[in-house]
Image (cartoon, rainbow, N blue to C red; front, side, top):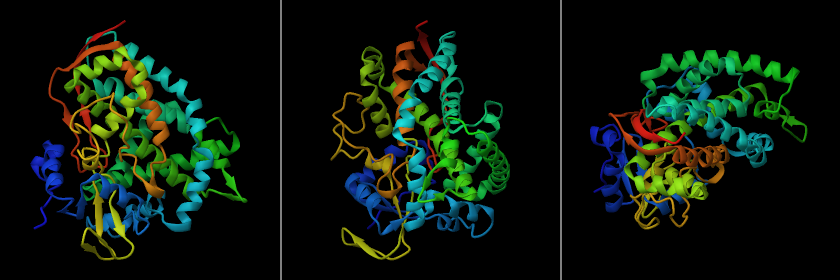
Length: 397
C-alpha cells in the first residue's frame, strides 16, 4: 500500500527531513496532496531530465482552486513554465546575457558586500542572522547584478517576495497580496526598461534588452517576466539558503571551525549546504505530457509528480552519512539546482554568493550558537528557511 506524505501536517512542518527519511527507506514514492511525491535520488534525477514531463504552470494554480485571473496569466508567462520551442527561444536569448563570465566578473562585488555586512556584525556579539546578513546580502547582490537602483530596492524586493508566494502550496491565501505586488512590479519594470533602452549600463537588465539572435530580441512581456523571475527566485532562495546554512553549521560546529581554518574549502562548503539543507526543499512539480511507467507504476497523461529534491539529496545510497553536514565530502552531484531543460538559470550566481559569503562569515564570527528560537517558513512554500535566526558569536575584528 502506497504511504501518504502529509505536506500540511504538523510533523512535516516541524521536521520535514525526519518525515521524509523513513518514507524514502520504505519506498521510492508516496501519495501527497497534489499527486505522487518521488523520494529517491536516482528516480528524482531521472524525472528532472525526462522530456515527457513539463512544469505545471497554470495547472499548479488550478490544483489550488485558481483557474482564471492575473495570477494565471502571469504563471503562463514565466520561462519555467514554457515548453518546446517557446522555451528554447527565450532560454537562448537569456543565455547570451546571463553568462558565467558575467557572474565571475561580479565576484569581487559580491565579496565587498559580504565584507561590509560582516564588519557591521563584528561590532557586536549577537544578531538576528537573517536581518543582519542573509536578507541584506541577498538583496544587495541581486539588485546590483540585475540593475535595480538602490533607492527602490527595498520596495522591489518586498513586491517580488510577495510574487514568490505564487510558487508555493498556499497561493489561495495570498491572492490579493500577490496581485497587488504584480501591479506594482509591472509599472516599475516598464519604467526601468524605458530608462535602460535610453541609457544602457553594465548590468544584466541592459544585457537582456540587447540580447539578440538572428534578429530576434526579447519582447517587453518576456523581459518583464524574466526580471520578476530573477528577483523572485534569486533573492529568497539565497537568503533562506544562507539561513539554513548557518543553522546547519551551528549544529555541526566542527565544520564551521574547519571552514574558518581552510577557506579553500569554500566551493565544497557551498555545494554541501545546498545538498544538506536546500532552500528549495520540495522542488518544482512536473506534469506528464503523455502516459509513462516507472518501477511498474503507471502515470497517465496529466498526472502530477513532485520530485522531492530535498529527499533525494539525503539518499544514503548516493551520499555517505547523508544526514551529516560534511564540507570535506567527496563531491557527489546534488539535485537542488534541478536538471534537464529547466536547470536553474541562476545557479552560477548562487554558487558565487555562497562561496564568497560562507568562508568570510566563518573567519569573522567564531563559535556561532543560537540565542533564542528561530522562526521558519513552512516547507510547503516555494522556499524553506528561517525568517528569524537569533545567534551569538565571538567576533574577530
